[in-house]
Amino acid sequence: MCGIVGYTGPRPVLPLLIGGLRKLEYRGYDSAGVALQTGVELVVAKAVGRLSCLEERVAGIPGDGFLAGMGHTRWATHGRPSDINAHPHGDCRGRFAVAHNGIIENYRSLRERLRGSGHHFSSETDTEVIPHLIEEAYRGDLASAVRSVAGLLRGSFALVAMAASEPGLLVAVRKDSPLIVGLGDGENFLASDIPAILEYTKSCYILDDGELVVADQRCVEVQDLTGRVRHKPVFQVPWDVAVAERGGYPHFMLKEIHEQPQAVRETLRDRIKEGELALDEFGLDGDAARALRRLHLVGCGTAYHACLVGKYLIEKLARLAVEVDLASEFRYRDPMVETGSLLVAVSQSGETADTLAALREGKRQGARTVAISNVMGSSITREAGSVFYTRAGLEQAVASTKAYVTQLVALMLLAVDLGAKRGTVPEAERAELIEAIQKLPELAEEVLKLAPAIDNLARQVAQWEDAFFIGRGLDYAVALEGQLKLKEISYIHAEAYAAGELKHGTLALIVERIPVIALATQPPVLDKMISNITEVRARGGRIIAVCSNEEELAPYADDLILLPACHPLLMPVLAVMPLQLLAYYAAVHLGCDVDKPRNLAKSVTVE
Ligand code: F6R
Image 1 (cartoon, protein in one colour):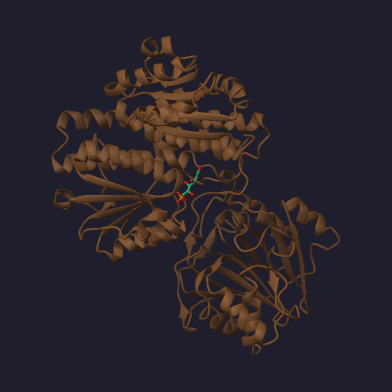
Image 2 (cartoon, rainbow, N blue to C red; image 1 turned 60 degrees about the vertical axis):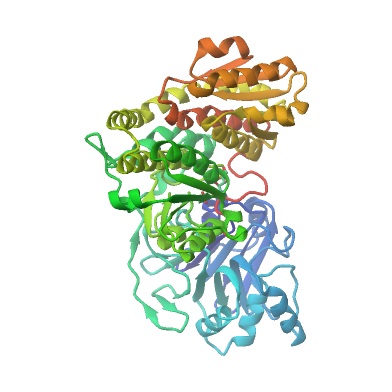
């Protein structure tokens, strides 16, 4: 969500900024802009739409001859997507430029006050107050001005500022929105995420909240908001440019779907040793596991769907009460979190504002906290008591796939571990589950071989206006994820229901040829599921069944997606993959922008 790139150094600044923004496109945006510093003045260009629109707009500007610059991709929050509302924003006389990610919650009162003292605003954004505040505070030192302005702002921000009168200088500050500093030799970078700078350096500082950076081409200084210098460890990025590219696939999403077996393998590496779980990362020894009375799982969107699977598994295997909350609801419902309970925050990016706030609420109420995240050094991982890293690798498509399955694996491991430590999973069952978990990567490879058949099926799906997904138990949680994937990238209206719920209302919508994707992978409820499928068929609904039992389901299905046999509790990992592929191919057949669906952002750093 919004992207920032800043550069100071000898390279041609304009192409570097545009290239960096391109690497951040996956975060989601609706307009883009750059500000370039000549040493005397600031040149600003902005355009609504894709980066190609900005490229057209800057076609007449030479790439080099600038000392520093900043680029921004905007995902609209305050003010519609437009040229004027795109960042960077300036003050009254064009002496300062600011690019900002986040939301300034008190912008209305600040704007009123600034207007009262004669400032003119040209955009509808919250951000524009910042350059005007800098204009007011500036006494020849940009760092001091930004420091004092940061003290006036409420909300979340990662912002970069430049002054026309301080050649080659970038000043940035962070609160609740990610920002990194790339360290080069005779050049330095700022960015909201690593891919933007990876081509140039793998050494960076990951800024903490309340840190301000003063950077020119020779030196980078990190300070706190009182101006005291902070000495930070240099973070070495463990992956390279090739990992961040599409590797021959037409879209990141398809690449990431096919990376799932490897992502699961990596997530399991060293966590199962000679048939035993080695899960110190959850920070729970036997006594702590036995003492637990309640566990909270929080996440948003796809991560929330992973939490629903986690609830089912943990309650079943560890006989521990689990509450699952949408992180965006958690702190507003006055939740009861007993001291000593465990709160697990699940977040691919580790930056989701709502999940971070839920984690903080859990901590405030005395819970132990664990993060399950895919991004090292992200905000949620830094604030949680313990961290379990999924090792899905960089996920760039907005629609989460490989991160989701690794979240499932993390929660499966946690459930088995808790069950073993609490004595609720007999030894033989534990060994059977661990063996089955280790087979998941191979089974996932088998499932992905269905891709061509699913591509065929997706041609029909692309004609649909509506789709229903049904399932029971774990299959219901997977149905929810399947419908989210379909609607977010193909824009086909989709809904998921617990199969037994249909007859309590939604069956009214099932008429001739209405497509229903029925997940039927759970033997204990297979008969019930078949009854629900027949209810749909009796009203003319068209069934696509996802199952591992051809004999039982074939008589009831118009189409069958057959999964390999697997332990039923682990089925969600396999069952979701055909649904991801179905959504992907349907979106491709409809000509949708698969990796960057409309209105969505990869990392949702605002509430
Ligand atoms: C959907 C999707 C989102 C995210 C959600 C939480 O495909 O990716 O629903 O799961 O925005 O993001 P993280 O996991 O980064 O907290």
